[in-house]
Amino acid sequence: MAAVPPVCEFNWSAPAFSLPATDGKTYTFSDVAGENGTLVMFICNHCPYVLSVIDRIVRDGRDLQALGVGVAAICANDADAYPDDSFDNMIKKAREWALPFPYLHDADQSVAHRFGAVCTPDFFGFNAQGGLQYRGRLDASRKDAGPVDLKRDLFDAMRMVAQTGQGPQDQIPSMGCSIKWKDV
Image (cartoon, rainbow, N blue to C red):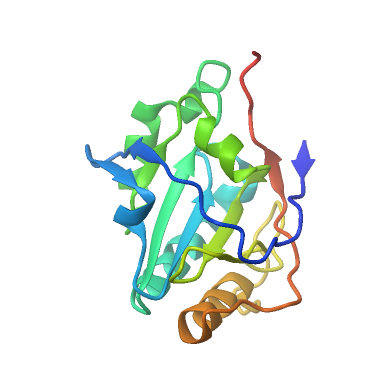
């Protein structure tokens, strides 16, 4: 089922976290933060919205890191109900996709709840002070990737954040599969 996150709540503070990653390390927000900003994205291994643009997510992550923006991805889906999103499969996907940034596992979904994550992919772009400046889409792709020359909404917004500390006022929300919440 497709889900759409809310619009950006400017200067909302990034929640703290400490999560295990596919590289065997544990990361906090400050560990992944960049000198010019930080991008935290919620993705997963099986979502068709993510799979159709994972090459663009990797490209934009790498390009943003070159601008001093820290990048991390988090998988928070219920791995019991969706075994494709298990930590072991995250490790395989991180290698397959050659992720240039940490891929973190939010097994108890507490971080996703604190962020208010809604879907995969869901992008949270923070400035150097940890204030939210972007909560929009990667580009105009949806369940299928759009043309390769689409405007790079996420990259352009985070480049602006890196340069000015502020994101664009007009943002188009991301869209994707809903986070697979555990029954509590």
